[in-house]
Image 1 (cartoon, rainbow, N blue to C red):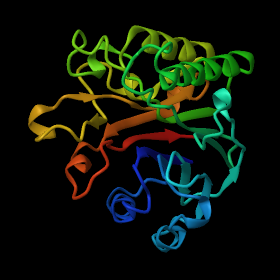
Image 2: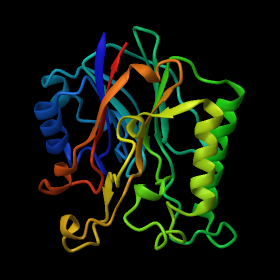
Image 3: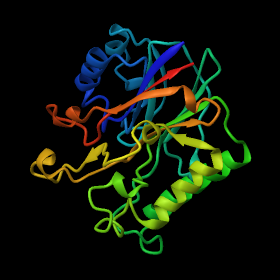
Image 4: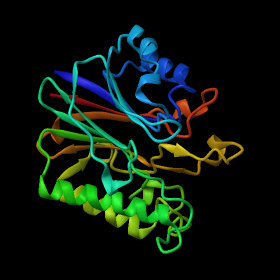
Length: 262
């Protein structure tokens, strides 16, 4: 059965409840994967989304920070979570569809501003998080699996507005992009978005600091959809809803979509 999923760092689901509702109403993905929900699960605005036809919730949350969640029209079973790098953060949750497909929803630490773990603990935490992701999927290679989320790394030169200018900027440093590429290879993951859109600049995040984000267009592709190799051929229809960055009171991220014929 075909289904469409979207992944979106919402930067507070309670603050942007209306934007989530708008996306569900206008775009109608079967599954919406959210990151940076910034709320305990018991405070999640489930009634609003259930009223729009999304009664299924699988989530991990914490007050004011982090948080990952699935909203779904399709039945989902909670498939557990992993505390990557032992940070005690709500940054991963997995859900299983009736078909047996498992979806991993991830929110990789941003890593702070200085790309040096000797002076910036947050950068070290980010590297450790992605390294454990790599090692876990190398040891237990995924099958019939999808991985989505805000991975906070733009791996390719055309995933950023200026490759050379960002080589020393957190999210595009060689140590980060190399580690993410290694993690992808270790799990046999296919970057679905780039399989569908192989050429050209492509962004899913634009900084709040830009006076006119659209005109400046200094973006980065931080949000990703991967599929295990055995089902990657079933993916198509990838797109990024750039217009949502211009909605009133937006997240600084835009939703990324893909459809799977499974």
